[in-house]
Structures are given as structure tokens and as C-alpha cells.
Image 1 (cartoon, one colour):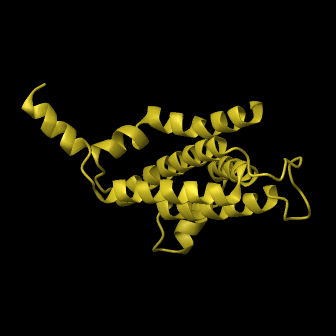
Image 2 (cartoon, helix red, strand yellow):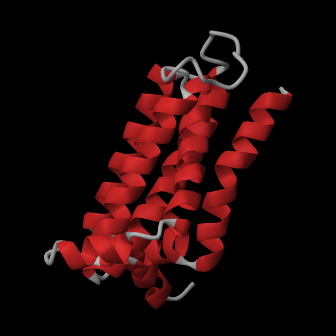
Length: 172
């Protein structure tokens, strides 16, 4: 081990604004998961996936950008992602016209399943948000963020993580 390796490791783990935001997102995600339970987390995960599909095919982004001169494509994408996720979560949670997936048991699920799904969802949302924020503001991020959330492999792994968590929690 060389002395330069120690300094590289220290720079890799230095606390910057983005790592603090990621820590906050993960803590908030786990706390929400503990409160909401497995059913609501599953509904939220499906809402996020559905909103990404809707956002991909939404034909009026250019209209919003042209009508509101202060908005950029990145801001419109973030706002639409939030609106679509909120709407789909409202529908999937069963509060809209009693539309819902088949009722799961009312219990919140085992502790490890809720934590696993919460962390997977928090990582997926962090990857989504930081990809858009990075494009939107063009701010430099720490090497940790670039490696674990912004690379194409990391984005794929975080996108698949909630699906794996749902599949594991359904099997057990």
C-alpha cells in the first residue's frame, strides 16, 4: 500500500454536498419504509416505474419549455416525474375509485424486507434524481457519486434493485 493510495481513498470518501444529500435520501427512505410498510413501498416502486414510462412518451415537453421561458428540459422532466409518480401512487394505493392491486396482508412485512425495499428504492431515486440534476445544473459530483450512482452500470443496478427486492419479498 502506497501513501498515494491512502490519499486517493480519503478523496474518494470525502463528504461533499452530494453525499450529504444521498445520506438524507437514504435515511428518509428507510424511515418512510418503516412507517409505510411493504404494500405502500411496492405501490410507490410501481408508480416510479410507470411515471418513467409516461415521461418517456409524454409529447408536450417542448410545449412547456416554449410557454414558460424560465423552464429547461431538465426542470420540466423533474416536475413531470414528480407529478406522474404522485398520480400513479394515488391510483395504485387504492384510494382512487378503489382501484388497487390485489390486497396484500395488512401487516407491514418483516423488518429486513422493508429495509431492503426502502434502500433499493432510495438508491433508484437517488440515481434518477442525480442524473437529472447533474444534467440540469452541470455541477461536479464526488467520485463516490459518479461511481455508485451516475455510471451506466450503476443506473441499471439501481433500476433493477427495487424489482429484485419486490421479487425476494414476494417469495419469502
